[in-house]
Image 1 (cartoon, rainbow, N blue to C red):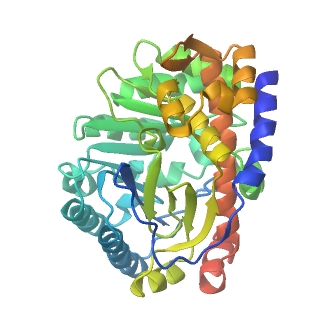
Image 2: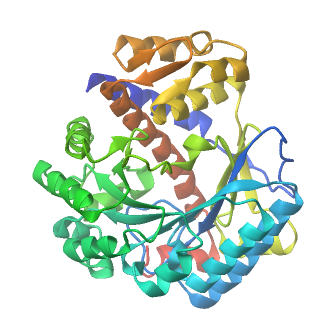
Image 3: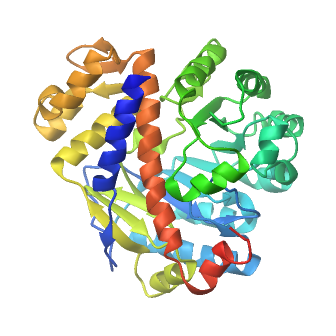
Length: 429
């Protein structure tokens, strides 16, 4: 699709400008704005084994290292509370957050003691869908998201997930057994693998429907430069030629069972918990090694070194070591991207926040989207996307997250000493 190629090229160019960071060893977080609502993100950077395509900050699980880390994570949470922040929503990502269930439970309980937490979202993997991990979280977590990626056994083997998590039928059974334990159960999938056929994707969609989950997220395969080689060696060289076709296939197969809640998240009727927290919360605080915050027009990035993170928190400082300050135009483009990612943009809110109509603030972006037929409903209050527009947002968000993954890849590459050896030495990457 020509429109996708053009948007992808523009986004790649913008990423190089927008997502270039500068050092910022901060001693305190910015003060909260009493007129804004924030979300708390917690990062748990441990996995039993590391997936080759993942750019998130993650280390092989070690119990002693993890317990020290969780201790400092809860200390940083208290620093955030002392700074005056409050949160109604908590999202816990990784890594594999459930890798040490006792420490996770203690962390969630502290968050609920410190803040007015009303809903908790947490990620996990299929090998943790058993009572010893699930039961302690039933009354603590509202939305559980399970990283499946695909139910196809050959793809699972290519991703090095078959031996870790079981075959597709086993994973399906575990999800079915977990159904009803949480207010919302999300199944994370990936599409557009190089060896994935249309029939394989149709089967994945059928098994998602059969799983009984209340929500599913189909991410396009994202290849940041640092992991392209590993992807080529495991799942094959990534191409975006079939992406639009496969996206339409997914939409068609899920219709009648799920309805779109973002460009790539599909929910059953009545499920109000959206997979992507950046839709509901434009500003958020991230704690933990490798976490990111977006607050006061600044992107703040915590150190990817667990050692440095623990040292900073022990000294009473947040984990932030890099930042990027957004201009007014940057913030308008960010609102454009995140608003339409949620399939609609509030025109009145845009004008209220930026003092201009969106057509005047972002004339080139809006003219282009109208010209290619990306909009459906277009009135004084709201603009919604057509099916073509929803795919274009998938492509734009894919490129945006590739840019974010570049930040993660560079931060991980800058590790030194024993941490670098763990990730890059002795074939552990």
